[in-house]
Image (cartoon, rainbow, N blue to C red; front, side, top):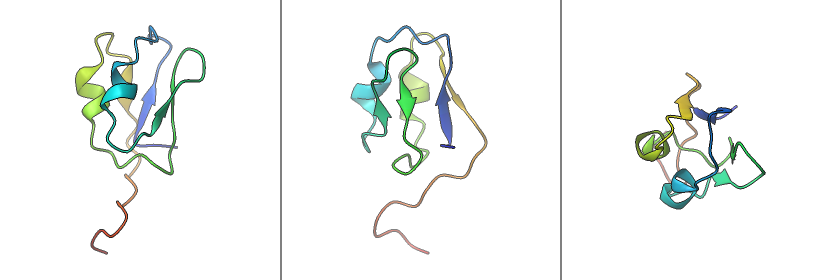
Length: 69
């Protein structure tokens, strides 16, 4: 599970998809899906969602490639 999840409140507007720097949000109908292996937990998607449909899950983020141990 990713550090964020898209709930059923998702309208499919794509704001989170366009904002994600890791391209972790993918179209898969509605709600959109977050790929856990790509999400770094930056929360940019949470901030831009006009429907408040993207929420934190409490899961730790993955480390970005080349990140400190």
